[in-house]
Length: 153
Figure (cartoon, rainbow, N blue to C red):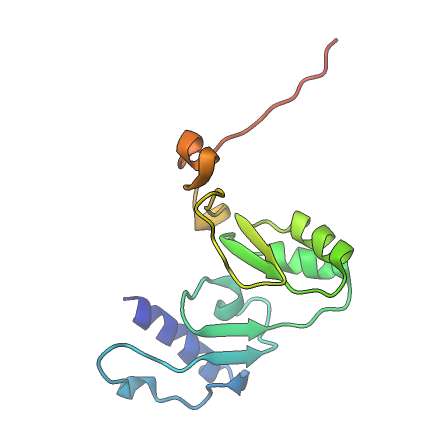
């Protein structure tokens, strides 16, 4: 089922003639047992493409460029998904500003996804409710916790 989902996203990219930097031209109909496909990188697909809007959970990624910090934050948050994000940046202050504003359950800076069992792991939006692992996961496992603050009169 997952292979079929990744394949359909790949085929959607082909059908829309998106630019492939790596992995274009695969004949996924002829995949041998094991459901393996080579990694795929798609350059500048539209913001509303399936590849950008969905969570493929497979070896296919979009490469999108940006100029303005506010623009990239808005674009990254303009999705129903929110499992994880990665920020790559030479400027530590900029990386922190961007990462703190991303709507994702986990954000890694200058490294790939690296879940740690001592830290809460979970998604937001359509990527999940609550989380697991770490002290917070033990206490609030899969809850939608909210905090309200009221000023004294």
